[in-house]
Amino acid sequence: MALRAGLVRRFLSSPIFTSQSRAAATAASSAYASAADSNNISDKATAEPNTTLFVSGLNKRTTPEKLNEAFSQFGEVVNVKVVIDRDSGFSKGYGFVNYATLEDAEKGVKGMDAQFLDGWVIFTEFARPKRIPGQ
Image (cartoon, rainbow, N blue to C red; front, side, top):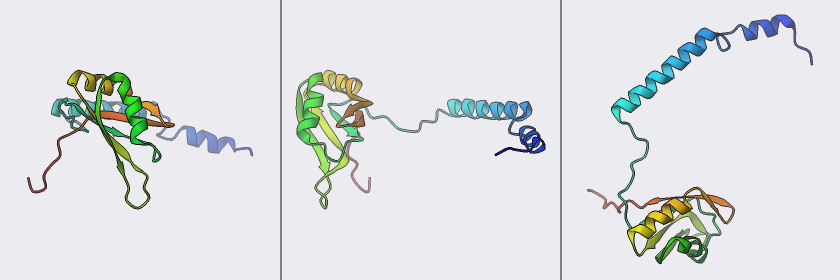
């Protein structure tokens, strides 16, 4: 399918491809980034380091035994919980791992974050404390 030369010329001369619009877009994005840095905006609040890890991105067929096996290479695992859907009986896609020491937990976060488990990429972070409703 051939395009007419006039149509191509008009498309290439549109503001999307001109250097002025690129410069304006670059200036706007850098202004936004500096404003976000100056206001100290954070997309996700991080939890204080503790011995409990939150693991997300689990395959629905991941079992506590598989999770324990994967995380035990970084230290002594005390407890593993994969949150299960009551209706289907499969994982909801997240779980918790408790380590014996804070050092083991830190190694577990660094070692297993963005790694593959059962064919899916999982993400680990320190678990946030459970919030009580109304507080």
